[in-house]
Image (tube, rainbow, N blue to C red):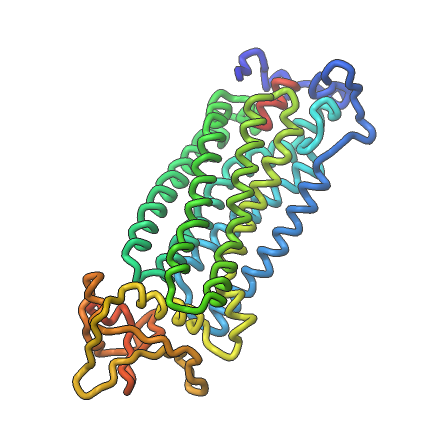
Amino acid sequence: MSTGTVDPKLIGSIPLAILKTIPAGQPPSGIQPNFTNPSSRAPVILGVGIGFIALAVLCFSIRIYTKLAMARHWKWDDLTCSLGFICSIVYFVAVVMGCIDGAAGRHIWDVYLDKALNNSSLYQSYITTIMVTPALGLIKSSLFIQYYLLFRPLRWVRISVWIGATISAVFYGTVTIVAFVLNSPWPGESFLEDILSWHYLEFAQFSIPTGVIGMLVDWYLLILPIPAVLNLHISTAKKFGILIIFMTGGLAAIASTVSLYYRVQLQEDFSDSTWNIGYVLLWAQIEMFAGVAASSMPTVNQFFTHQSFPLKSWRSSLRSSLTHLLSSSARVKLPGRNSSFTDWDQSNTHTSKYREGFKLEDLKSDGYEGKAAKDPRMEDSEIHLTEDRSTTHEQLNGTSLGPVVTSLHR
């Protein structure tokens, strides 16, 4: 949409008292404006948003406490999730400003120009535009890293993670840079001039492509661990429990799909942009906070169900089970030793409750060689070489205004 007939300097020169009398848009035929008690999506946007941010804060707090106070181990997925959560909170604060003091979630003909063009509306439009891609990109990177750490023994999962993570990182990184360049005020521009500028409106073309890629990445993340879990050599009940943990990310995938629908609706009809943008903001929040909760869920499960064991016991059970997928029919014993393998929970006061073995030579089917480790206490190791001769997979791997407001809410 062109804003060539809109002069931001002229609009800025209009006294506030006059702006309070000019409707931001014209209603459809037969609709009467309501400036005293208008319909609004703001209560739904804020209510649902508060609920999901509370869920994300709870899960994230448990994750941080468990990692720092109990496991005392911090990894890259924790860092990316933390950065993504910070961006999500900034996004949420901007949405709150737009819904309370701005025009977001209201019909464009039910607000005056002073409300549609105030600082809350301007900041909401700018901050949400530049924060959404880094928030989603970092949260999804956290899930990719988590999958890599959990399912590392499976070669096809490692390859799938690298492909998906690379595409996601390149796309979200590029869009984030473009968003900052095109949406930020250029030298000499005010926020109003920036939002009515050609370069700000140019970025609106990224809305639907960003939604499509985001939706595809979300569903990719949801489906990726399913075949790996189903092929684990554990009981059906355990498989079901693990799948439930990973399926919490399904809410983020659903949210991204619904968000794409409202993005398309907004692009096709700018006549009521302040109303249509409301649900775009809502479902973007749900996607972000559901992603944080999903990324934290394995740790939350560990906190509530295995508090007497270190954090790595859940991961050790899963990863030792994955080694069964590399098995063939041969079984080789180390000289003078029993070749069965046991999980190690790294506890001096508890022994592992899991005793799931695999054959040393079977790892050769995936290109690994049976090799005793010199140091059984390696990073991320949950299985070690005991008198029953257990070892880690890594050790076997070599120790390794209509127009005005429309442009504002695009």
